[in-house]
Length: 454
Image (tube, rainbow, N blue to C red; front, side, top):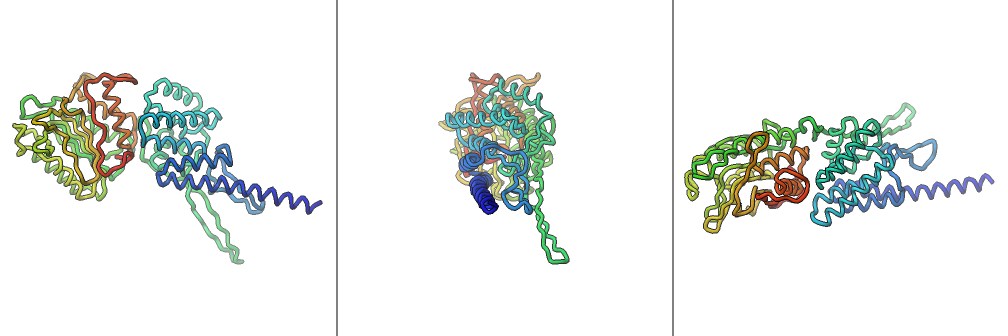
């Protein structure tokens, strides 16, 4: 009888180990794909893990084996295939558009909401649901989520496995909901050999910390490799071209980058009412001090022209739209920064009248890693309105407001461009439709992916 019992026990153990091998292999494949940014593959793999082992687990998992050698799976990490599947879907949705994006976000929303319905109350689930409602402009759902959060904020004890998340997202959750960081582990292994020759290896988890994003009321933590050049020209020597709000807009952008986007104030060069030589000198000075492979944000508000197929930024000393002597070639700005291998994200608030068949922004660089956005379509002019008693460019206001809403130091350029686009079309008001007389371009990307971040 005892022999039969042992056999049955061994068979049960074998079945258990086979089952665990299935969900473990799928889960590890999901983590590997996620760390490589392969979100579609990660989502499939995490769903496969959930098919073997259905529910997420906040606590540690003890693996099958001898009771004298209790083994903890992944150093006591939580098991989060359903959360990570939804998260991977969310990340993939950021790289697509149209009906496919909306459909995927709908699926992901239902999955995150399903976790909350199971009382798996984690700050990460609240955070990403809120991000989805921001992206979709669904104020009603955001308010409902906020009410739910307020009612359960003291119960956000469910642990999430953060190893399948990007470090900046882990930090965003931790900073937005202090004290509730997703659990991320790495192996800290200590080997001890006793006098009798017995070797004991103890592996303990460590929490991966980061401070890349600030809470809603604070300043987003800066990344030292990010730099910015802001040129705000409100004056112009060319009749009828001055943007009276240009200098104020430049200062607004600087404040937004420091507060909401993780730029060190000391890494931002702001020049107001600059001549062509001052612009050129500032670009050169910035290039001299940035490290290799730096991220450089460029914002220009003023007069831009296209002469013989080349774009130029006019200094305040320019007096003629056809004389480039008091202008700086856009290609010169780019090439100066490209010497350091910089990734350049350029935003131009300049009117784009068509003259002799040409307009500012026609020139698209062929080399370098560049994203460029124009504040308006060809042939149109820059518009402004009153905000808090002061005139502000519609493009600037939408850009600043979007930075304030996203609040992260790792902003995906294409998603940012879409949000600025929709905000401008609504004139900074409402959530749906839009009738603004100014429409920006979406980012034009040169040797850069749509989820490249600035």
